[in-house]
Length: 369
Image (cartoon, rainbow, N blue to C red):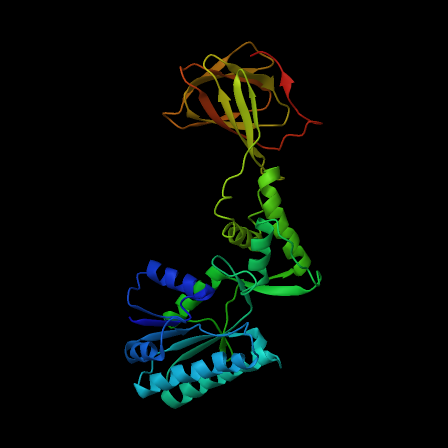
């Protein structure tokens, strides 16, 4: 199948082209602003499906709305008719098409052209009135407020929250792509004469700004966003895509002494805390027990011995651990426990505990194994 994609260099186009390639589509006819109408004519001779994504949403002059969203669509359809090409066409319109503004009028005019084309030629058309989109490869100060907030906050730049109470509706790029692939297969989700992306998210502008600020702060307080909330999960992925290329890393506080080090990695309000413990050869750490706090130890490098004792007995239980065989060792409550480095190199242990450390309620009682 030869697939024509107009606007292939834009936010939506880049994501769509990448996913079409992932799906094994190889004959992609990609039309961008760098191409000519002669290129478009060649593409319309041989395409089997059209993703018409090209359009104008932030012109210098209002008349460019109609030129870009109506005029170019008209040229595309005329070329298809010239070559008797009745390929299915998917066009990206906007929820603004319902409103009486220059952008909305131009989008509505483009829709009407497509419906008329379908009636005259029999070509199948898929008209998507999309809300605000967000995701990787979007442009700040152009595509969406999400891109602008992510870009600025990641760089400690100011953002403008003009009306924190205004509620916005968003679609995530991956949900759009899923729906566009369904249309390619002839099975779009429809509502009356229009096609829709079923999964949308609403959030106020103020909450959006706070959410993205929290993402930035998470690199300092070691928190992890709640990935059970779909919008949060998708926004966090988007935020990370806007990190400056020289700022992918961030430092952790290493608590170092002559025994080795202990470093907190991740803290969550509901899923506990993850830390990395490094012990030098011969060093024993632990010798304490907990009432309710419980842990999981995973040795990833070196050799060690984890020892347990029920505080009411003298019986000692031992588990040999090694980075050569990754095993998780549960640390039950009521057992005093320790871990000793029995090897010649550093013993590195990833430790999970079911609650983030609270110095006011440490639930850590020292007692030799």
